Image (tube, rainbow, N blue to C red; front, side, top):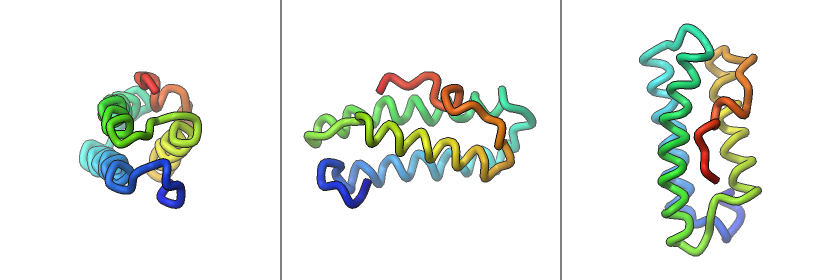
Length: 97
């Protein structure tokens, strides 16, 4: 997303920070099953819901490209922590973007 001028770097940085906090929470809380993981990813999804306002204020938005990128990152994080069977739709089920 950094390569696309439609997405402001300072807002992308905030999205990156959300994902890093998600990683920190997963590492600290060590969810034992998918339901526990989904609870953590839903909290991060809510942060992205709020971040969409920042995108809009900057003349951008979470649309197809950003949505796919964010969902891919959620899948990557889940997989990196051993949750290779996590459903992509469940990881970001609370999204409104």
